[in-house]
Length: 103
Image (cartoon, rainbow, N blue to C red):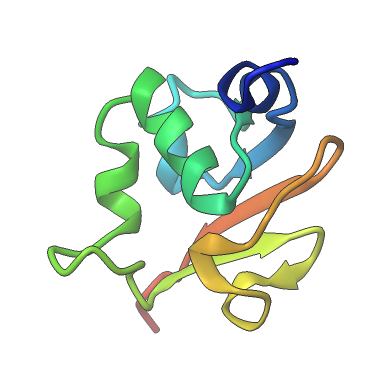
């Protein structure tokens, strides 16, 4: 019998995460990165493990996503699909769009 731990680590999906120019300074200038995780939150944690400080731009001190950060999974706003706990699957595309202020 295969343990749950080895099973879950082998089935964690890898997805494409696209970031805007504002966040590219944290991803070494990359417009898109591959990341793994079973949920949006796990994907963000995976990116942060390679690009320290990335997650800090997404979350406030209260541990919740900043309200000005818009995250879309396959063009669906995650606010309406379960927030950071939204599950992801292989082949998904995550777009992270921090809102810009100005006029």
